Image (cartoon, rainbow, N blue to C red; front, side, top):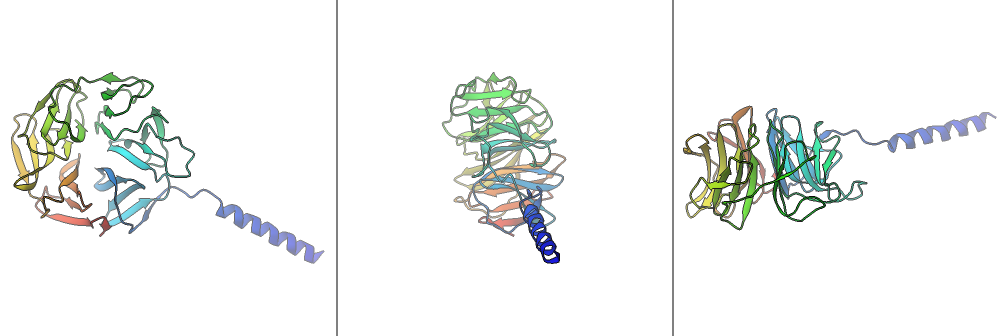
Length: 302
């Protein structure tokens, strides 16, 4: 009897151990040193840099890199807001989520994802949201059950959509799109032939720079930050919205073969800026370009 009881106790312990090992891992950020590639978006919140990649999201905080322990999806069109983020993309292999993700939202740093629109239908590579307004713009590249191809916007998180005429843009190649953080009606589009601005929900655009290549753009309250590539090399500018005055921001030494493809800034402290280059070099500054820190070199985290 004693031996039988011991066997039962041992079996019970094994079952409990097995049960614990099968429990779902709690969502968190964990320190990482993995190489980063296929970056699809970025943002700064609470002074921390967040990036969205082909294999999940990461953040840079207090000189350390962290990666999410779950929900490591391919986040396309990643756009951070004051409340969280909006995105699109594809689920990680083995997930029970439909592919593509459509328009999704998270307000708990990615622990849970709310399916807002076109779940299982659309993957929006071009997606932007107002940091404070939550006005969402997309460029729909493939027709779905409701939208044709073209630019659309929603002011109620995907319940209803309005089409934009997208008139005035004389370029066949788009870099990025960026919505004004507070004003629903303002959106900027970077192209290989200059930077365009619309003040009427994307219906009519005006060229606000010379016709040089503009790979990256970010709208702030009173200005637009954008990168350029021309015969003089790679540059970063801040241009005011009221009179169009452009001021160059000092950047690290990057070659014309390694242009800036992404730029973001801290909406609460615009002097904190981050840039990502074609080769996945990542730099961050706290003083609007006076001093830069390289936090990734060719995707290798530092």
